[in-house]
Length: 351
Image: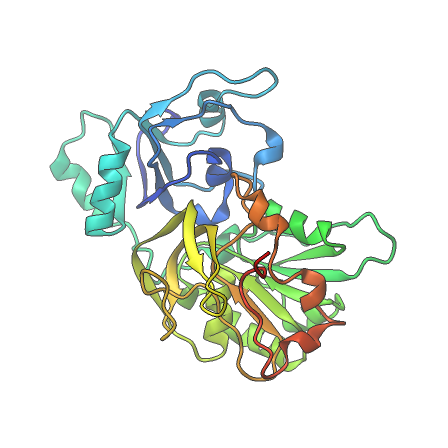
């Protein structure tokens, strides 16, 4: 096992991405999880600092069938990256077989142990680990200090991000659409958030059980009561839904990968999306597996959460370039688009 650790624990999940492995390792939404890369070869283009999505790696463990040892000139080989960041990594298992098992039995707690460990000794340690349901990880991965992703233009309006595990690419996409982004820790008070005078509030993605995130629903409701436009992604969708009476539940094995089809029920258009979450919102509007992808507020509040994302830098940039509802269209100054009776859709129009 690479990474130096003799033991490692987490909820074992799989992702179907063929690329974007460094983004997976540094995505805070994977905190507390052992990630199985379904694709059989990982690491063939190395790593670089620009592709990291947060300040550190968050995975509890990493499993690959075959690890590429080389890298193009100027890039660090993945093996060296895993060793340098002490990421517990298991190389050699049949990851497609593990993926099929997880799909059949569901995500479950897992552990890495030395080969000499007796199974009778290992299993109680795995069972002693906390399950993902009921676990608050979002506040653990949140930034400890506020910071700003600046837009180069003078007088750019501000989008305030409440960080529950945001990816760097999400912030870059908002910045590229003409906004500075003020990123705040998850524990920031409503008064402090409003003091940033935001054009809109972004509730980020993140790990763990949305029901376990303290005060999130109350905070989002208070911000909406103050008239703030609010948009969110992944965990952000779940937290926004809970703020307005929605219920969330744990999916059997979650959605993780860059190739999930999502249909717009209003236009019939289908987009291939990037997803990473293990919980969903209960609703009568179903996707192919019974989980909701988008939710709009049917009243007068400017709310726009979505479960899928175009923010991951793992081959999904074309989707991001056609972002369905622009930040400028949604944020303060054009919030009339969210008034009663004008339902915003989750996809760009055809053509």
